[in-house]
Amino acid sequence: MRKNGPIALAFNALVIVFMLAPLLVVCIVAFTPENTLTLPTTEFSLRWFRAVFEHPDFMQSFWNSLWLALASSTLATLLAVPAGMAITRYSFAGRGFLNGLFLSPLIIPHLVLGVALLRLFSVVGGGGSFGWLILAHALIITPYTLRLVVAALVGFDRSAEQAALSLGASQATVFLRITLPMILPGVTGGWLLAFINSFDEVTMSIFVTAPSTVTLPVRMYMYATESIDPLMAAVSALMVAVTACAMLLLDRVYGLDRVLVGRNT
Image 1 (spheres, rainbow, N blue to C red):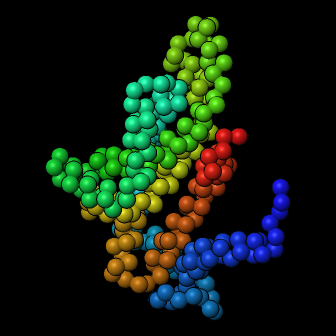
Image 2: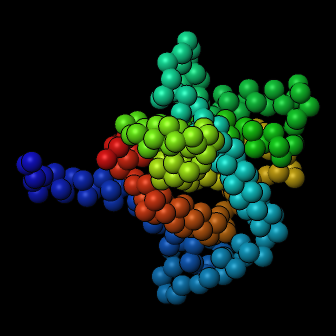
Image 3: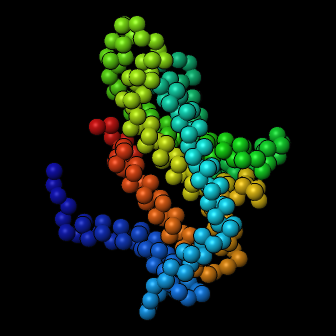
């Protein structure tokens, strides 16, 4: 395979710098001791990071986002595993429709989903409910989990399952003792990817959260419309760190190349 030349390497480096520069600037600004969004020149300070942990609204929103991401990603995984097995292993009428239905949130703008869910919740009386918020997030993150589960099941060698069934094992035992452990990297990777997307979701959440269930991204959006102090930079830096750690864990568990490119080997 022909290697990239110096011009291609320089272009790729410039693209990476262009994409990462805003995040780097925000993370540096978070360490400023000043009262405005300025780059620290003489000294670095943890003042605004301490302010984040001393701000009760931000801490409450953080816990809301954490529990919401945990619950919705778990629910999405519980839906994606049987759906992925049905789509990859069986031929039945409506299989393509079922696959498209699960993946449809990827092509529908979250703004449209937010307005639609707001209307739905007002009709069924679910506005402000944390349970309904979990369902809303599970709706938009299930495609990410399903994609990785399907990737893990494609080309799956079923000889071990067939051997266990021939020896008298039940379907439940085969799934728990053989199938699930073999596809566990894909399931775990899908759960992590769903968790990241739920934790960072803001567009749809603006429409369906209540004062008692405001998530951290929504709290950041609300605060940014009222103030321009470096507190937002500190919160953003913390979110970048959490997301980076989750992506690193996802890479170790499943591999980012398989998530982004769809490789199964």
